[in-house]
Image 1 (spheres, rainbow, N blue to C red):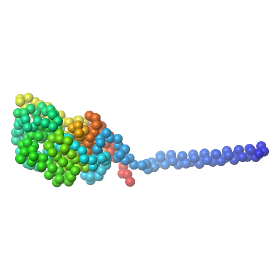
Image 2: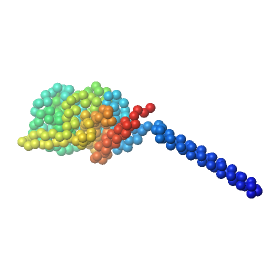
Image 3: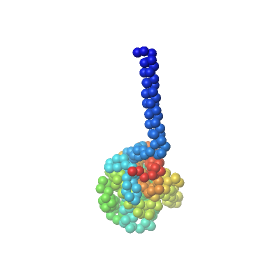
Image 4: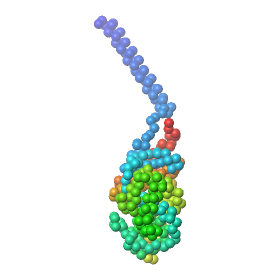
Length: 298
C-alpha cells in the first residue's frame, strides 16, 4: 500500500472510531438524562429485607394486604405468644377480674423449670394476674388464671382451641395456657389473625403495652417490666405487643404498630440471638418507611 493510501485508510479509521465514540457518548448522555429525570427503577421487594427471624409476616391491619412475608405458613412453636389467647379466653368468660387468687404449688412450671417471683401463697386479683401475664409474660400468673377458670385447666385449654377455630386459626393448637409447651404451635398467618382479634380487647391493648407495673405480696412491692423493650422507645407507636421464648421456638414477637402512616401487624418467629427480633422489627420499619417515601408502585 502506497503512503497516500495508508494515510487515507488511517484517517478513515480515526473518523470511524470518532463516530463510534460520539454515539457511545450520546447513549450515555441519554441514560444519564433519564436517571436525572427519575426514570422508573425496579421496585424494592419484601425479600430484600434481611431478617434473622426464620418466619416473618407484616400485614396492613385494615386491609390484610401482605407487605412482607417469609415462611408465613410454617407451623412452629409459639412460646408465650400463647398468652394473648389466654387473655381472650379469660375476658370472654366474664369472670370477675377483682376476684383475689392465691398462687399455689400447682402453678409451678414443671415443663421448663422457669423461675418466678410469685411465690405460693401470693394473693393477687385476677386483673393483676392478667396484667403480669401480658406485660411481663409471667407464667405462674397465666397458669393460675387457667387453674381458676370454671372447669379448670382442661376446660381452659379446650376453650383456647375453640376460640382459635372460631377465628379461622386452623393451623394452631394449644395444650397449655403459658406457651411453655412446645406443643403450642401456629403459623405467622394464624398469629396475624390472633393479633387482629386480641386488639379488639381494650385491656389487652393496655396491659400488653404497659411499660412497668408494681404489685404487692407478703408486705413488699414487686416491680415488673414489659418484656418488649420497644414499648419504652418513644419512636415506636405500639398498640399491642407480646414476646415469647422457649428453646424450641426461639425468640418471638408479635405487635400491632403504626409505621409509615399505616397500622400494621408484625409477626416474627424463631429469631436467633437475644436482640434479633428487635433488630428485625427495626429493619422492617426502615424498609416500610423507605418504600412509603417512594409513593405508589405499579
